[in-house]
Length: 124
Image 1 (tube, helix red, strand yellow):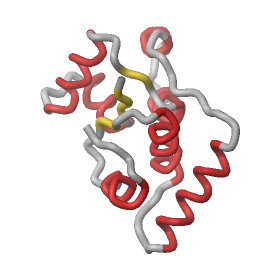
Image 2 (cartoon, helix red, strand yellow; image 1 turned 60 degrees about the vertical axis):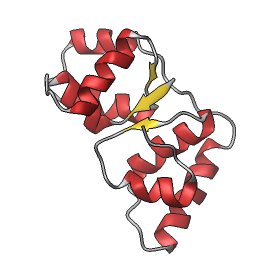
Image 3 (cartoon, helix red, strand yellow; image 1 turned 60 degrees about the horizontal axis):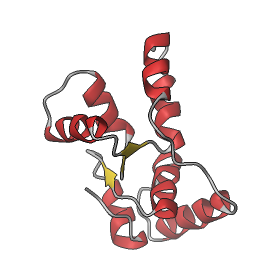
Image 4 (cartoon, rainbow, N blue to C red; image 1 turned 45 degrees about the horizontal axis):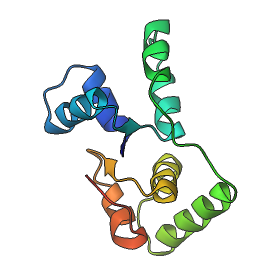
């Protein structure tokens, strides 16, 4: 199982031939993908997202939150901010979901390298 971030999902939905979108297509066909909740929220925040997109994405499993999730995410973000590294709230929540489920993240966003280096996030 892998997770994907918003940047990859947007490329995939736009039909981009970038390697990450092609990998996501393969993993979706294999039913080997789950979304961190924030990714779904970000994509569905597009005012042009239609009901077909909502229905399509709803069939893909989501990584739920477990007890202590918000505390762990807060501590994770504080750790990176203390190191003066970029740690957006959305990226932190995506990372925490992946850490909690021990799944690697498929991303195009270089900001996740900080989470990989300092928090043990696995990247695809």
